[in-house]
Image 1 (tube, rainbow, N blue to C red):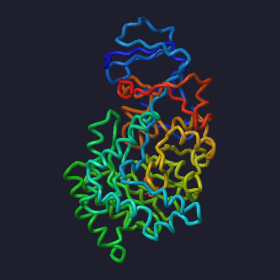
Image 2 (spheres, rainbow, N blue to C red):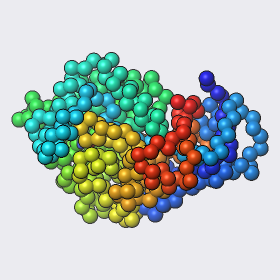
Image 3 (cartoon, protein in one colour):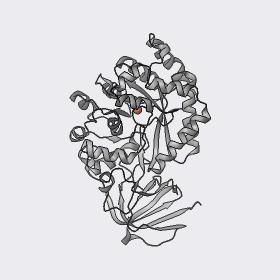
Image 4 (cartoon, rainbow, N blue to C red):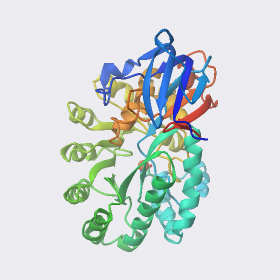
Length: 414
Ligand code: NIG
Ligand code: FE
């Protein structure tokens, strides 16, 4: 049933209450998480209409009135980096890693991204849509209200376009906001192993123009890493993408610091993601820029690689967003609650910093922070209503527990 107007009252704590002018938070400001205790919240259709302390609630007029006594409300998570559209799984590689192979060794034997590409190339739009829908439904129930999804398991013109077409159908079939990123430069297909220039040419001369022509993506990504795309190739792809109106959001510094952050900054990337291996110069070049650094702690957890040095980065004044990286190889999980916990436990982020990173800063990293990522008048009513928890510190503390009572996306409960 659809209600035009909803009123929540007696909310234990209304978390992440912001003015419209705040589009991201950085450095010491990340420690602040504005909240209202004993609050009300009004929703008009899809959007937040009003909120404040209970003492300011004038009337109970609404189609749906919810006594939220004991429950807190925060904005739904904004997951700015995922690869949710994929075919099949890679659990055999997981076991190979337990038995001693590294992620890079598996990839060099034809596993990894190429393994997923083989599976995806033979899957139909319908199969991909169904598999991805299940994952999308799961993450929505886990409190995600907006998500970025990348291509990058196609690696041919046809299959990259197929992935982006599926992302577009998901966007029109699900209530959550979905942003599409073209990641043709995810790995070199086996046919181009000895002809990397040929693949760069295919990306720049065929894939990018086609993606732009069909309006299938807003963002362009490259896996800038030793053994994948070098700095020069990354630069060429980003520049071509920009000519076609695609904004860079890139994979950098996952295993090695090779200059990817600098390419991102030079090309005005919206975000630079992964950042597990950061030299001082990589941190310095991000200072005083609009580029959002994005950490993916569940990838570090799953691959047992270093965590992004979040503490140092924030202490030096940078902003930081948190995302899942949901994908079949390095992070088969789309659970933002786990990401927030892991950021606190392993990266020494405070609960305030982690919640900021997973909401307003995540929204910024998708270019949607004027409409998502905080409790702000006029923003979408994308909300997590928690179970009865003592405080929001409990969200990262009680890792692994499901603390979500209900999720609302654009004014409607799931
Ligand atoms: O972000 N690092 C590159 N891409 C993905 C993993 C891709 C895969 O293993 O399928 C990531 O970790
Ligand atoms: Fe990724």
